[in-house]
Amino acid sequence: MCGIVGYVGKREALPVLLDGLRRLEYRGYDSAGVAVLNGSLHVAKSPGKVRALEEKLSTETILGTLGIAHTRWATHGVPNEANAHPHVSCDGRLALVHNGIIENYAELRAELTAAGHAFASETDTETLAHLVEHLLRFPGASLADAVRSAVRRVRGTFGVAVVSADFPGTIVVARLGSPIVLGIGDGEMLVASDANAILGHTRQVVFLDDGEMAVIDADGYRVVSLDNLPVQKSPENLDWSAEVAQKNGFDHFMLTQQYAEACRFYERTHSLFWDQHKIRSASIIQKWARGLILSDHSEAAVDLIEEAAKLIAALPEPRGSKPAEELAPQFRRPAAAGHPQRVSIGDLLYDGACRSAPQEVGAVVVIAREHVGAEPCQRFIPRGLHERQSLRHDI
Image (cartoon, rainbow, N blue to C red; front, side):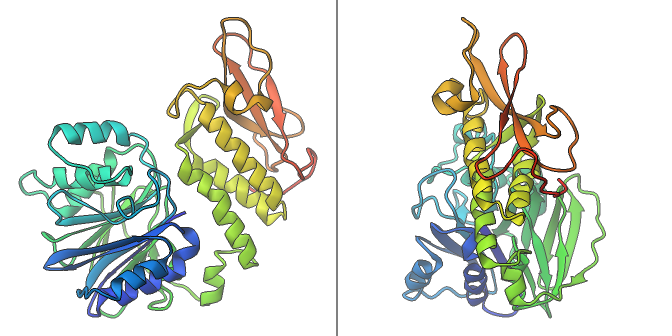
C-alpha cells in the first residue's frame, strides 16, 4: 500500500514530509516524491526507497511551508520517476497524491485528452490531477469545489491530497475506502494516510470517514461531506507510542508487514462481485486477510490473496474477458458446449452452506457461474486452513 503525508504551517515543510515518508515506508517501496509550494510548485520524485529521494534532494534547495508527499507501491505503471507521485497538472500549478484505485480512469483519460490535456505517466492517479485542473477552469471554482466534483466522478477508492499555487496556504483532502487522518498542531496542520506519520509532531488528530473531505490551512480544518454538507469532527488524543503506531494494531512488526503485503491485493485489483452486487475489495478482502493473519494463518492469508487475485482477473469486467480456465483452472469444471464459464467471489462458507451470514470465517465459497444454467458451489480452502477451523473474527 502507499503512503501520504502533508504539512502546512510555520516550519519548512520538506523535513516534516521526509520524516513522515520514512515512517510510512513499509506501505510502499518502489518510488517516492514531494511537492512543496512557495509561490510556485517545486516537485521532486525518485524511483526506489525514500533514501533515494533524500539523496536526490541533497543537491537541491526546496523551501516552503506547505507541501505533500507520497511513497508508492506501483499499481498502474512501472516504478519509475514519471509514474511516481505527486502528479501535476498541465500548467504545473497543481499537485496531487493518491492512494487507491480509479476504476474508470481510462474513460476519464480519454475525455481529458480530447479536451487538450497531455499526460506524462501511465498511472490512474494522473487522471485525477488533470480532472481537478479541468474543473478549476469553471468561473469562481475553488480548489475544494474542483476536488469535490472530481472525486464524485471517480469509480473506485481514494485517499487524496491536493495543493495548488493558485490557492496558497491550503491543502484539500478527501477519502473513500482509503484512510486519511488530520493532525492538529500549534499553528500548523498535518495530513497522513497513517497516524504513525504524524505522531512525532502532534497527538491531536481527526480521522476522516468515508465520503468526507477536509480543507486545511495553518489555522485549522473544515470537514464536509462529498455532498458539501458540514460535518462536525472533534479532535481526539492519541496515546499510542511511536512503536505501537508503527505496528499498525498488530502485536509484532512481522504481522504488520504480512498484513501490508496481503492488502496490496486490494490496491492491485478493481472490484469484486458479491452475489451480483459490486463491492469494494477494501470491505471484504482486507478483513479476510486481517482475520487470517490475526489468527496466525499468515500462509493461508497469502494463499487467499493470491487466489482471489486470479479470480478477479477472470471476471469479464473490468479486468478483461480471458476465460477463467486460463487463469484459475482449479476453480473450473468442464463447461457446457457453447457456454464458457466465469469465476467470481461468491460468499463465505459457514457450516458447509452457501449464501449464509457467517460470524466465523471458515473458507471462501467460489461460485463458478455459467452464462446460463445452474450455479454450482465449489469450496476454496487455503493451505493451512481447515474447513471447520474457527477464526472468530468479525467481518
